[in-house]
Length: 325
Image (cartoon, rainbow, N blue to C red; front, side, top):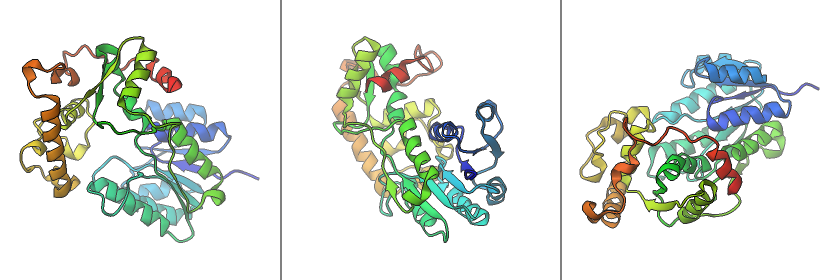
């Protein structure tokens, strides 16, 4: 009996690419959905995946890409209008008469969450659940381990681990572990239909424990340093890690002192969440930088620019850290 063909959205991304690799290793036929046929898509094709080019916001392109597929993995784009892509995906899934959709969600997704994008994740879950004749499985991990690994360059070069989460603890899952859960649901949908899974790491860890692991792997002292919200937003923008809709926001981050004038920011954040962020930012600035002249760590250390000595990547460290945790 032939195996069902599985369409994987976001196939050139971190979790999407891992899902493609996991399915191919298990011998399943995979159609990788990509935005453009670039070197990443060509690499997947060499591994045995079929390539389909489509815009996640275009239901006609998605319908064409889904023809002949029986199951699909939906990876929502990091976009303020993400729910439109979910709606387009749902329309195409009905047209293609899919058996199952396995969707990436968020563990905090709810109709009352202060963040618009997180509320949209909840709406997308409800939308997929309501599709007649199509099973839905939600994969809703917490904070990804990959988010911590993005900060390895600071640890390797400066001995600092920027911490935005205070004393909280987390059991972060790797992209590969998340992909294994998604792939298992796609390979045996009857067993997992209508369920929700939250992949986690093996144990709860805090920022100091993460810094200790980095110290052991890098063989140098690494310490966790509180990072103010305004500084995180500035660094994120300089590194190109902000959504396209808010790319024009000023680096000075008006969240910290007055109501935003940017229409994009008003669309993506509620006034309730803006007020919360304003209070958090003020309290953290007071706690972490009482006097910049005598501050132990200069904020400039966290904002890599054209003259920064911090490299874009540090080879082999990521895998070493994952193996050590």
